[in-house]
Length: 221
Image 1 (cartoon, helix red, strand yellow):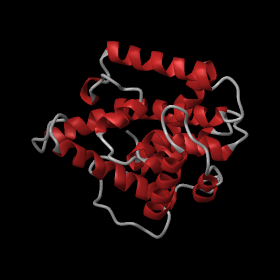
Image 2 (cartoon, rainbow, N blue to C red; image 1 turned 90 degrees about the vertical axis):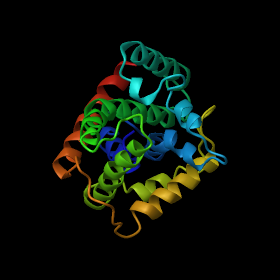
Image 3 (tube, helix red, strand yellow; image 1 turned 45 degrees about the vertical axis):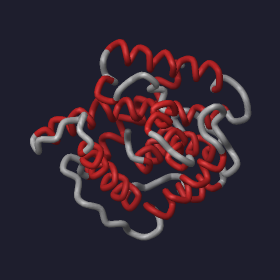
């Protein structure tokens, strides 16, 4: 649910804390769930699958039984892919993305639901997607221009070309999405309609809290 550049900033901030050795793979994992957008004949259910939300509607995600199911899927994924192997940090990055999204839904999306309601937009309306994209695009553009990355996101992502997330995302989907991110956010300044809720302070606070959350939860998986 968080924007792709926000995910990269969280990856950049959490990598050292987690002792990540292969930064390119970790960065690639942190964008991987959203790379399904590059799939031919993309449909919404495909993204639901890559985000472990099969059978869970967005507006019901925070219901206790759905969170329990989501967390169980995270644990199963971690046990299967993150304990060993040369590419385990790719899969650790994948978990980082999903944990960050959960926090975003709790802290940001819930407020967007209230704000959108002031304009007569319900989270079950088609218009709500556009409302959220306004927040995400502006936040990503601001972060791309202003966040001080330790590892250059463009160079780092391109070093991971060839990796894939078994059962979820192909190598070509990661490559296509990486190039889209680089061109859309890191190749010159992009102008987006100003966000209604997100601002520089809120973005910085979210990146900090997400990095904390990712570090804490991945260490105990």
